[in-house]
Structure formats: C-alpha cells, structure tokens
Length: 366
Length: 268
Image 1 (spheres, each protein chain N blue to C red):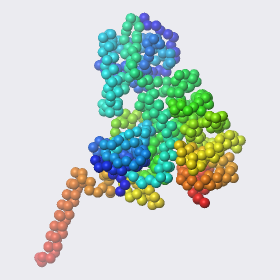
Image 2 (cartoon, rainbow over the protein chains, first blue to last red):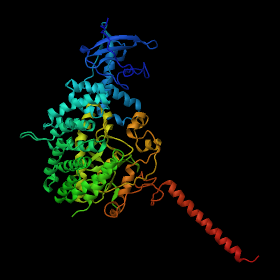
Image 3 (tube, chains in turn cyan, blue):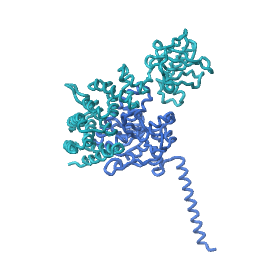
Image 4 (cartoon, rainbow over the protein chains, first blue to last red):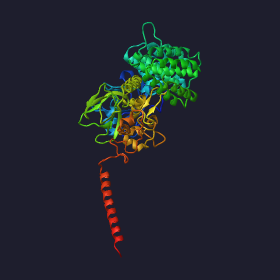
C-alpha cells in the first residue's frame, strides 16, 4: 500500500483536474493551470491514490506530496510496464518534434497542445504497490510556484536557490498591499546586497528587482533608494544598473501619486543632482546609455523640485542644463517633459501643468 | 517615395528604417520592426537583416523582411532613437530570461495590442508595446509622429485576420484584457500596414517641418495599399471587372446621347 501522509491544505480550484478526450489520448493533466503537471522526483514524493474513475478503466486520481509545493493532485493511468515504455517513447518522440519544429508553427491546436504537454507529462504506473512517476529528461520546468504571488514570495523570503528566478517572476506578478510589504523587504535586501555586481546575469535580475521595487515603494523608501545610487570606495554602480535606478524612480514620480516634503527628498535629490552634473556633458552624453540616464535624472529632479515648490531651484537647474548647449539632448528633455505632462494628467493635474510650463522653458534656446 | 517591397533587386536599408513582414504570398502586413544594422546595407527579399522588434518579446534578432521605409533620419534623430532603445535593453533581457525559465507563454508580458503602448504601473513595471507601438514610440523620440490617432476601427474578427495564429489568445478573456481588447469593440488598432503606407510618402511629409502624421484608411493594412482612395493600378479581379463595366457603361451612355440628339434633329 502506498504511504500516506497527513494532508496539507491545498487550493482545490488551483489543482482541479479534468479529463479531455480520455482513454485514447493517454493524456495526464492537472495541477496549477491548464494542462500542466509538475515533474516530480520519485524519491522525494509520497503518493496517495484517491479514487478510481467510475467510467474509465484504470484511470484514477492521486495526490502526491512534494517537498516544494505540498500536495498536488493529478490523474494517473494504470498501465503495464510494457505500455509504460511505449508511452515514454511516444512522449520522447513528441519532445524531439518540439525541438525540431517550433510549437507555434503547428496549425492543429491539438498537436500543439500535445507537443507542449510532452515535456510536462508524468506517466504513473503501478509497481509493487508504489505509484512511481517518471521524469522526462532535458525538461524545462515551468515552475508552478511562479504563477502565484505566495509562491513567489515564499522563494523570495527563504532566499532559496530559486531567489533570482523568483525576482524575475515577481516583476510580472500582481501583489496585494499586504503582500507588497513582504515583497519590498525581500527586494530591498537583494538590491542592497547586489547593486555593485558586474555579473551580467545578476544585473538582469537587479533590473527586475529595481523596477518592481521603485513602482511599488512609498516615499519612506526614498532614502534607501538614494543610497543605492551612491558609489562606495573604489567600486562604482554599473552604468546599466544606474540607468534602471534612475529610470524606475522617474516612473515612480510620474505614474503614481507623490507626497513629498523638502526634507523627505533631500537624499534622493542629492543623488540625482550628482548624476545630472556628472553626465550632462557633450562627451559623456554620446557614450553608452548615459544620455538616457541623464534624461531620466533631470525629469525626476525637476518633478521633485516642482512638488516641493522650490521654483528658484527649478530655474537654476534649467539654466545650468541649457548652458551645456547640447541641442539634441535639450530637445529630448523638452519632448520628455511634454510626454510626461500628458501622461501625468490623470494622476496629478497640477504636476502635469507645471511640467508643461517647464517644457516651454526648454523650447527657447538662448 | 521612400518605401517599397523588397524583391530580388538589392535595395538600401539604413539603421532604424521601418521594416515590415507580410503574410506569405499576400500584401497583408502583419509585423513591424526596426532595422538595427549599424551601417547601410544592400538587401534583397531573402536576406536576413539585423532588427530590433517587439516579437513579442522585445528582441534583437535577424529576420527576413518584405518591405522597408526610410524617413531619411539625421544623425541627431538616430541618436534619439538609440537613447530610447537603450532604456529598453535591460527590460528586454529580463523578459528573455523569464521566457527561458517559464516557456514561451511569458513572452507576452511586454506586449499589448490597444493602445499600442501602455505605461508602467505597480503590477507591470515596464512599458508595453505592440510591434507597431514600439516603432512609433521610437520614432516619436526622434520627433516623428508616423500615425494619426484616427484610424479604421477593427473588431475581434478583424484582428483574427490581422494577427494570424493567435486564436487561442483572442478566445481567452483574461488574455484579451491584458492586451487591452476586452471592452470597447471595435478599436482603432495601429497596424503594420499603416506604418508602411505612412512611409510611402514624400520625405517632407514624414520628416521635417511640414511633416504630418499619416491618417490610415481601410485597405492600408496591405502594402501596397488596397484602399479605394489611394489605389493606383492595383490589378485585382474586382478592379478589372469594375473597369470593364464602367467602360461599357460609358459606351452605352455615349450611344444613348447620340441617339437622343439624332431624334431631336429629325423632324417628325
């Protein structure tokens, strides 16, 4: 008899399994989304046969307890050893087909589904009272945990080996306000630990973390955010990371409400000022991505000054930037101010009008 | 004119030229791209060109294309487009990594259909584009507005024709909502054919002080256009029949007129 284990609660809706053209298709489905079944290592799983189908021979549902995802429910087919081998060969063939021909080119939707499934199907067969599951080779896991905010948060907080993957998926996951607090804590830790990295893979993940953090942070996080722009000793922030920090902050200022005081933006303002003074220079602007970095830094700085009603500093900064006399760059600033003025209208009308006025300041060159 | 189909004769393409791909053996344009060749290049229809485009996902790639349009960009304008692209590059790498981890479904995270560009928010902290939106936004960075906002309206059935092979996406209400086409049908969708017809004008109308955005009409989803207003010598069976009939009709009218004149002159 297969071992059983105490049941953990599971989301019945999430793990709903259903049949589709049964018996002759030999398909196995279930678990976390349409037609997906997580690949499970036999040695790490405990299986529990739940019930047999009343209308189909040798079809059953079973629960499997996994270390990573708790209980999952799937559909199993009782087959002999010979049939099992034939099934595995069939799915190997489909996988080879998948590698050879991109799935998108198959016009028949059923063929497409079959090929897509073939990398995710497990064949369950009865063997000495123990249900075992085969794991396809060269599998590409579509992690089921990535489809839920809780699954992503779990991996972010435990700093598991999948931390960086979790950050990438977090970027496109929707979080509730409560979950957002946990998200920001985890992202803050990752960015602080890795912001000086020069490794390409880490920088890609950092970009995701920065964008997600910035668009979800409150004004209380601005000081911490400013510290990430500061170079430390002889080690500088990579230009690509710097661009993401400045760009994401610019988006935060324009695409969400902003409630700031002069004191609360002191550090971030200094950091942005430093970027503007360093990069608004004819030689530097045509190098790497510095034009984009400088552009976003200027927009962010002007927004902060407008929001804290320090119009004298606004004029001072505009004068300084225009004095550098890089006309194409001034046109970019003018156009971006115009664009952000349009985009902020439904969020902050006053800011939108102020940006419109600033745009005019950049359209007249001395 | 500054646009044309690619064929066996080499044509010059330059960096950031607008490129489009068509459905096999038709003039229906289904995808828009930007040329990413660093230098001018002579290309034919079978050549693979370096491009950057919203696949989805956002990709730098090598592709065969079927039409090209040149707006005669200045160095400054090219620099501005490059600045726009620089901002997108790390977002592109993150999406590519997600696609590798999760399978090709994730390629759609950066993609939308209407409007053709969507601003970042808490849940999606990056710009989303359609393939056309990516090109038009890049050109707007260079102060070139290619398309007017007034466009022919498209229903969901029209979109199934314009975006072939995406029936499963259009059948999923959740996906349609993400793409911006769940409510408000029909929609003024920006199509790749419109872009190429926009490029098929004198340079002064595309780029410069007298430039104006192109207002597409029905039929402009094809290149060359099949619009009734803009069509010139398009030989389709319908057009040929129409020409024959109108010729016949005008002959009959001519005969009638001559008969009536004769009757008036002849005394009863």
